[in-house]
Length: 212
Image (tube, rainbow, N blue to C red; front, side, top):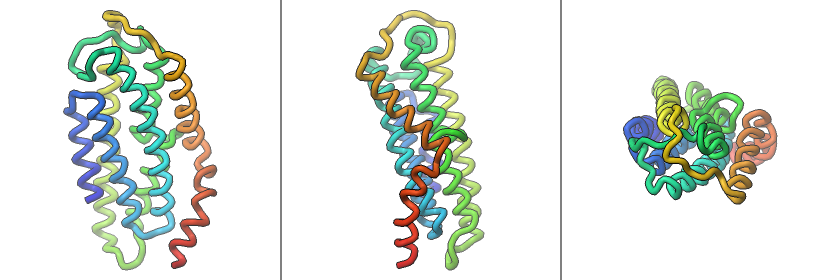
C-alpha cells in the first residue's frame, strides 16, 4: 500500500492542473515513504520514518504558505494559465517555491532527502521475517517514485517559476509570508545539512521501541 501510494500520487502530480491539489498529492507520496520505512521493522526504517514525518511537515507547510499566497494573488491555482514568471515578478515567493519543490523532490542537502533515502535503504534490507525479495522490489518501486517527484517538481518550476513573462504582475511576499518561509526554509536546510540534530533526538525512542 505504501508503494502504491508513492507511485499513484507521483503519477497524479504529473498531470494535476491545480497547484494546491498537486501539493496535497505529493504529501500522499511522501507519507508512502514513511509507511514503507515503518514496514521494514528495522532501526534504520523507524528512524527514516520519524525523520520523513518531520521533514514532510516542514516541507508541506512551506509549500502551502507559498501556494496559498500565489492562489490569493492569481485568483486560482491552475498551472495551465499563462502567468508572469515568479523569478521575474516575485523573487521572494519564487525562491521559496524553488526551495520547497527541491526539498519535495528529495534532493541531497535538504530535509526530504534523508527520510526517502533511509526508507529505500531500509526496504532493501528489512528485518528478519520479512520477505526480502518483495521488499527489494518495493525499494526499487519507491526509487522510481522518487524519480517521479523530480519530474513533477521540475514541471511546477517550469510552469510557475521559469520563463521571461512579466505580465500580469503580482506583489511579492508580505512580511508575514517572508517570516514564515524564512523560518521553515532554514529548518528544511538545517535538517538537510545536519540530519543528526534530529536523529540524535529520536534514537533513544527508536531503541526503546525495538527493545520491546
